[in-house]
Length: 126
Image (cartoon, rainbow, N blue to C red; front, side, top):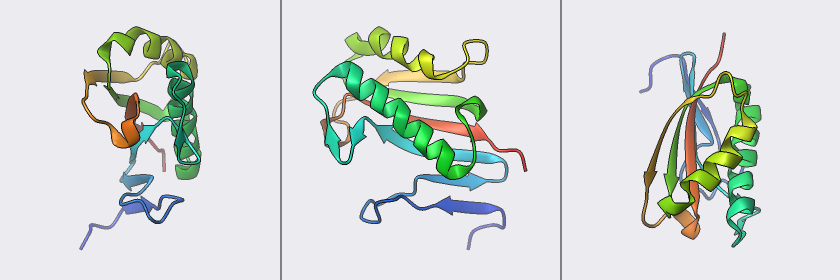
């Protein structure tokens, strides 16, 4: 049995084996997002990078937080040579004076052969 104060935000696709997010106390843990739109991935790096961030925005909206509430992100990149190009797109979705803490690492074999996956943590005032 889970402790009181744990909230699950179901994924819009009930066939996926995870929630969009889980909230424990004031922390919202957003599941990793890839750059798919309607189940399809673009073969273009910039398009996937922007879609990852748009998917994160949608997840924040569904959980009642905003991009400004995100304090930590973990970025998984299929090809670390794309790190700078991804970062250049990533930072446009945040206020540059309050960028979240971030880790990034190379990953071999992301879901659906995605180029990127990003998971985040956000603070939700109660």
